[in-house]
Image (cartoon, rainbow, N blue to C red):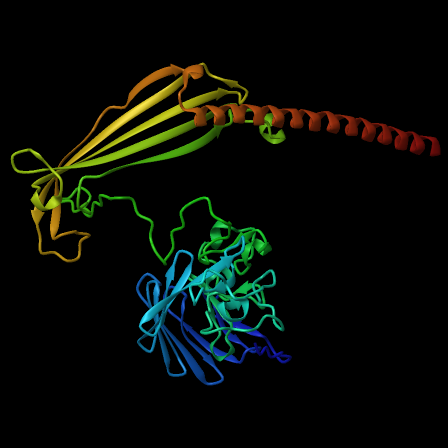
Length: 447
């Protein structure tokens, strides 16, 4: 990497949205952005790198020095020639009429450290010929130089964080979906799209300035890695087995995504909530646990069923004339008085909602439709929540029970710490009062 040192004027210039427009150290004289603050043209020493995106910001094409790279989801082409496509343990690249599987070793942050391929299928990796590439990084992603620099075959540009390095014309940025990142500076070239969520931090910082623990997977917000939740980004969406979508709330017709066959799924969420009794200012000030606390667990089960014109159940939409979707939500709540005592009675609330749809053929192409079918909502009904109580000791949900007990234990420890703090503050105040009295006596004796 060639990194010039600018010593005259400002190193960087930004537009009104906070996007970097020029970088005197890399001879970047202009950067143009689209409405999503993604670069569409980067000019370096009079040469251009051009980018094309779809309406959601997914990168579709890059053109530079006569080379056009097309990003067809996981399939990457250069000048219409397939270069590789991803697989769970690495990637696959063409080799004549065959394909080679390349496997990758990643560190705890998802950085690609080693790529290798058993070309001769002997079950042994020969270091000199079958290790394709090794990468080692400084904390903020700049690659080590001067050792282990051999590359066997095509250079794979996806390295730090598993993201693509934009090394054309000496740019040396990483394209991390929503923003571009310079590992030489440890800073982004654009404002954080979620900057208002992290007001204590600079909108240009990377991984809360702690890249050993955090990673910013898509340029939106740092997270611990590996993540504990599913990641939603422009690179793909995580969807449920089926999803009803109302386009005209209160209108005559409702359109919806159509499942192709009968199916159901269950989703469970857990919530710990706390409400501090108003007026207890001393408790709030000293950090006492909440006066009213609850731990809840909600299980939602959705099932669907197709029927023919005679009311008989059928397996798929092709032979169906109607469709029903039933959602059952059960919430189990454990109340904890004062954060220290679990109520004997546990509340269980159950609600059921049923929607009926008519299945008709359609020629529309702008709705989320499958097999040329359309759903027209004919009725919807939600039951009155049923409420029952059970004894805490008989609670079958062991996870919820252990969570409630852990909250009580945690609150007890917290109260004990707060009490010790109060006692320590009282002792310190006594010493301060004694010192004040001594100082007052000295002043009195002087006069």
